[in-house]
Image 1 (cartoon, rainbow, N blue to C red):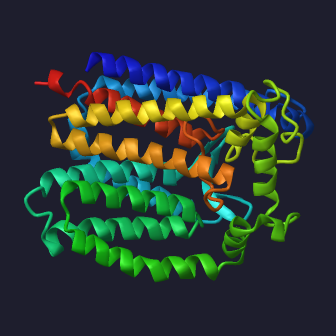
Image 2 (cartoon, rainbow, N blue to C red; image 1 turned 135 degrees about the horizontal axis):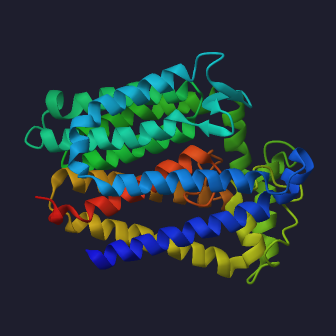
Image 3 (cartoon, one colour; image 1 turned 45 degrees about the horizontal axis):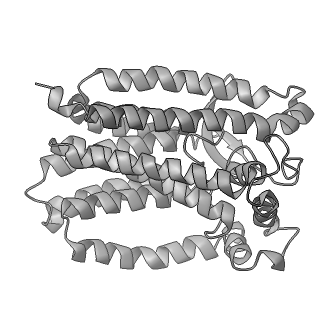
Length: 363
């Protein structure tokens, strides 16, 4: 698997480098205007990259199978942090959402840690209960209860996008492991009315769906962001306006360096640049799944599968939102978007994936 490790490492480094360049390009004008420092976000992002590199090497350096013993404590810590972030005075509130802890220049989003902790827990559960997975009470109910409690805490922030992403990844892991399709189907049927209420009973979520269906119905309100995103992508044409020459980043497109950085890439680097970026992510997923398929250890198989699925899902959703194919969800583009905890934990995930590729080397 050495060639796979090298390929996956090179692809990841390329994505991170693209993110560094594009974050500076997308945020420099905004940072200069608001913080009087054009490199404000770039410097912070480089701090997160450095932290991510240290933790990635750590994730590669030990026998990942030891995580089986740490699965439950790690999940408990993540759940406690997720509960604490909801406490006024502890969690940082931004735009009505309480999702972050703030430590000096470092912001930490516990839901990102929970996603990785949940993947580790489910991988451990599927390993321990491999002969009981088709049993309703022992193979299905326990992971559903744990996932349900976790999703509830995420929804209280509120963060529907992260809750849906985590739920989809867990469902796919259970499906691949052989959990009864009938049991999973019953859960999906039960979730649909809950999802309907969660979306249409909250005004801003309902507005997102309306703007997704017809952004021009409210071009200066709920449809503004997606319209500006599509303008950016359309303006880039085939070759783009050139690196640093985006017009939409000049206070037209909100969240240009975070959730909608893909649109700025399209504007500056054109269709060619977006296709090249999409190709890198496809290669990442292919190489990641290849590592998973060659892994003989069951725990490593499901741990690697969960990591690849989560990164792939966030990529598809982010690109889908930027192009108007999917309703707006606050999920960053892995390795590319500005966002400390998301970047760091995605890099840790890659470190674990590279570690799993060495599973045959462990005694």
